Amino acid sequence: MTKIIGIGNALVDVLVHLEDETHLNRLQLPKGGMTHVDRPRYEELAAAVSTLPHKVATGGSAANAIHAMALLGDSVGFVGTVGADTMGTLFATCSRERGIDARLRVCDEGDTGVATTFITEDGERTFATYLGVAPQIEFQPDPDFIGDDAILHVEGYLVQDHDFIEHVMRTAKEAGMRVSYDLASWNIVRADHDFVQHLVQDYVDIVFANEEEAAAFSGQDDPEVALRQFAAMTEVAVVKVGRRGAMGQRGQQRADVAGLAVHAVDTTAAGDFFAAGFLHGLIHEWTLQRCLDLGNRTAAEVVQVIGTQVSRERLRANLL
Image (cartoon, helix red, strand yellow):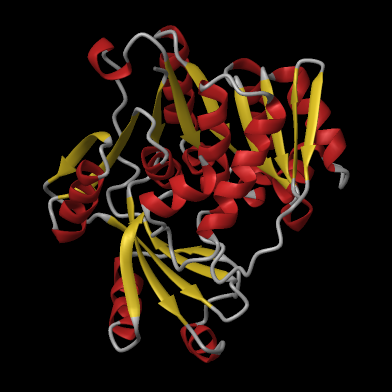
């Protein structure tokens, strides 16, 4: 069986459900945005959150996708870095319990990264992310870890370290792995456009983008334009278009799926779960249409719960 290995920031999500935007305004966090914070600011937010109802769960873009694929029954692994603290222990324990072959570097000095996530009644997420030691990742794939056939799923947030992400992709290709790449954020794509284009062109086999990321990549609002550009550079290209669904292309094969009408309470990890569903279909040699459909339905499951806590039983019963 093809193994999917994720690499990215190993984070713990602290999920806070808000009735209104009062706390966001008081904490000076822009609604819907993602703000990187330092340790003093993180401690300030942690103190504020301690008085509010909240949940704690593992997070991080690539880690979320791998978590979902583990729930779907796939062979998966993860590469990341945590601190020698309670949050790091939580991340490692949860990974092990889900059957994830997690190769975690543990730093004795520094903290596990935490994404404090404020969720308003409309399902919108506002992130305050303290990366801690998460970016201090090491990647040297050994045959016992990657097996005979593997796909490396890379989260786009790693683009902030050009040398490292290129090392990761180049090393993966040299090891015979296919590279799956989720662009992660439109502002990252815009800020590093030429470098992102270089990665897609020279290393990536499977690319995922949402509508905003696609526009930042192509420079045009029409997602069809970006899909054609991606498809000319990669083996498989996927552009998600929100409530309208998703579109994909593999060589000359093109497919589309319509959006699903569900009550979204939290859009955390929707794109990550889409990638998981799509990749599940891909490694089982499904048609492009079926891959898109499963990605769509997997994303629809996670937006109906707070965080990523979809049960294995529910996911398999509803999807497989």
